[in-house]
Length: 359
Image (cartoon, rainbow, N blue to C red; front, side, top):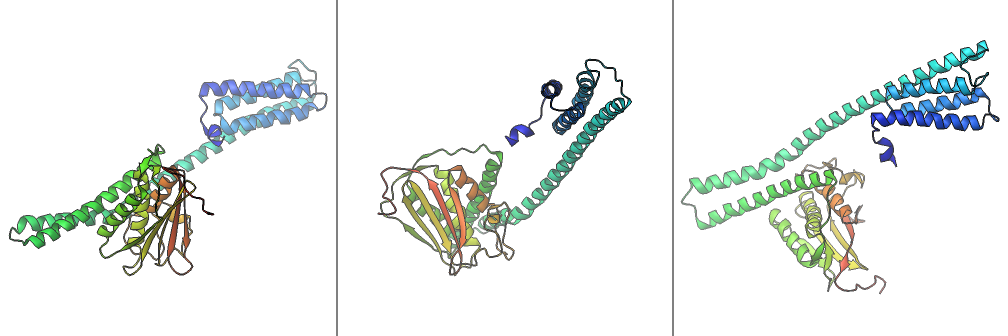
């Protein structure tokens, strides 16, 4: 409804709608002329002109103002059905009505124009702010893995006498940096897909257990020394969902927990499926999100006030976008003891009937 009201009306149709609306309103007032005086009819017509001024351009509004004044004079002001006005008071009222209708139309149009210009300036300012935020957020995240790749390759090329162990170590660093760089590019592409509004899940049968272990392994490789505790309900059925989207949801949640908690903190993932509802819980015993709203953390480039860890600030926004695209929802809560817990619930089709949660 709101989108329909905000859609621009073609200029030619504005003239047609203006004339039609004034005629309809005047006809309604004429049918009730026995119950209302001609002065009340003037107020109703003036209201119609004011409403048209909110939506239409200046010329159609001026046309409706002139037409309403002519109709009011001809059909309502005594003597009716003539443009002649006998009473001086009515002549003054007619003149004032015409002027007020015109001024009202012009002022409403100018106010609307000023609001549009202010909105455009705000959008431009937000675009500049977003651009600067992207540069600030991603400069470190992109340059660090690139620098690691360049440094490792330079060592491999300039030191032909490196031991096999040193070569393997440098190749491992290149691989990790490349994966980290690839993840940042994936996040940028994913957020672009979400912003465009043309993202559609491609659902197929997926082994959730295999997916979870694969994602956890990748996160562990990218964050040295971190171990993810995995708990999956036995005999978890195959689920029909978009594997790529679900992969990104799980990866970003696990990676977010890994980079925003101390290395000594534990990270766990719990997976179950009840009544065709896939539930994934990812929790840690870090600092949690005490200084932020639980909805704000899903905004782009959001960080806690005390956060000094790396990260582009896109991960949780992608989690929410992909989860909602899959028809599910994601919730955040602070654990009773310490840390944060993310609960992802996604409706899925399963390869076998799932048992009730009450059984």
